Image 1: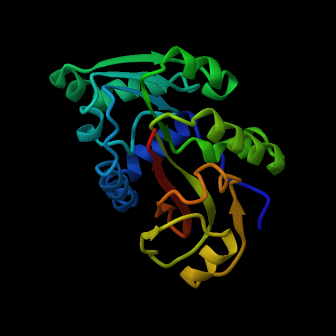
Image 2 (image 1 turned 135 degrees about the vertical axis):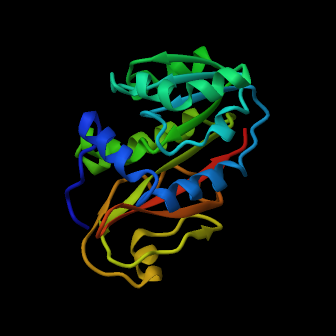
Length: 230
């Protein structure tokens, strides 16, 4: 596996998202929307972890909750999120509260403060390998997070692998965890692929989808999406 990853965040990230969301990213966004439609936690409150501006989040999903609590470290994320989704949330009577903070710095404390909320990790877990380049530490963090989330309704879509591919790859539905090398082989693609160290986040037998995301032309992220009932 390759030992580097694209950095994301900041104004460059938002400009890329603005340009790509209705074109190159459209199939991925549709895949996320279709997957989120299958997740129906019995909660009226939702924690959004790392939603950024919500470039890939559908209004239809967000409006299902009466209260949304967002945690993101990017100072530009809140105003852009409100610009994109604020109108739909207001019309639905949903309340949005925003905290500019790193959820991963106080996981247990935040979860304890919102004991009845469902949790959605918004393509954020796969970025931990950038902040903590030691893969073993990231894998241990994923396992700890899974343990802390036991008994909660939660879902995550996150970078699993990323690399270069010119083909348009199809979505996959998996009954459980698949080894990275086997997943790559199942697509019939070669080259060097970066492992984002998130393979241990979802429980072994949790059903999941692989949503290929053409992040830019010639570069694909294999996004793993799955949810766990409380």
